[in-house]
Image (cartoon, rainbow, N blue to C red; front, side):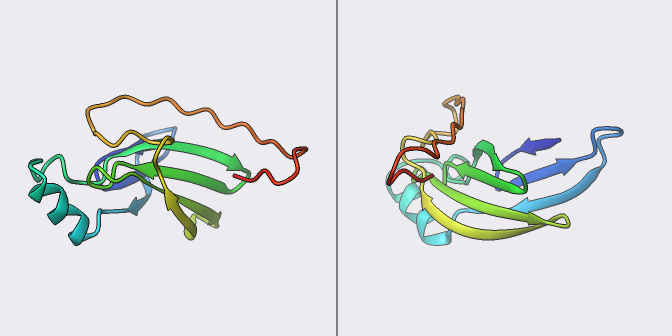
Length: 117
């Protein structure tokens, strides 16, 4: 079971809720500074993890607000280790404001030429 938080994703045991692993992902310092300069408070200028989707067995798409500049990371899971595969813009996939709710649905389309994640 995963728990999405500010700057971290916790992987918890479904049996007793003990922490199995954590994935840290903070906003880069420059993004936090720019966010604060634009008038947001430092608490809001963190990376609130808002979207997580299993895209294939052993593969995760995780997106965060990243100081009001959403980003997404693709991870490969190997023996409880998360390997970052790619980073992409999170616009349209993840809210920019940590106060906004989000719902994600992933649909794999393998038959359309030129379509990818």
